[in-house]
Length: 286
Image 1 (spheres, one colour):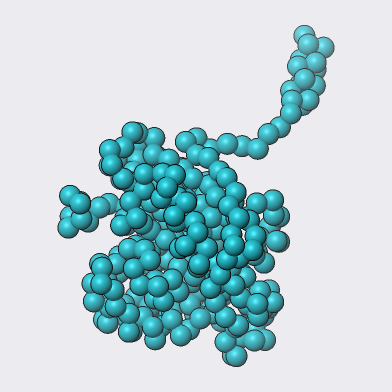
Image 2: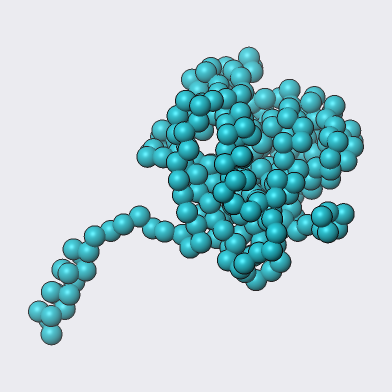
């Protein structure tokens, strides 16, 4: 018995390991002419057959966030009526350190504000900010990737969410305020507005011909963790300015008590999707 057990153990250890796979999902690589490099695109599909076109979530930081959002959407679509495609946008064949640099380059739209040039918190992204590629990444997202997704999958371009966390949420807010009509819903988890404070002024002057829904969330302990970022103040001010000045904009704000910049993320994604995925009554029959 002992010999047999040992042989079985050795055989198990010799089994070849392969990358884990996610149900109802597929991935492919897209080369961007605007950015000049490849992106890893992961797509999760609804479990149940759908009639007509379906809502779609474009998810920034796909390398780190696609798994949890895809599983949430798959389960939600199976047990409820809010089916959606999830499109994760990430980078192929990169380690964690490379990913940090690439996302900072792609999500920032200009150099750091003068007051933050020597900030310890911003030191790790200063190089990427100095050569910020946000304009090129935005062009890739809107003019290259979205047409590919809309050709390949039955997604509804009028029911599209752009979702991001931290720098990703900053980029999503930048798109919302500088490319009106690009998406009709935005999920902003802990947006790093402090790196592009001029967005607050843009929020005061924001207008859209079509209704826009926005969900903003942050953790109550984020300011203790990132004091220079003023995460809670900026999230509250962005929400207030949109509510007070942006006609046709519906904004939800949620604080996750006892959570910090990292631990608030699962709650923010879940609550944001619960808020944004249901079809508003005014558009439900379209």
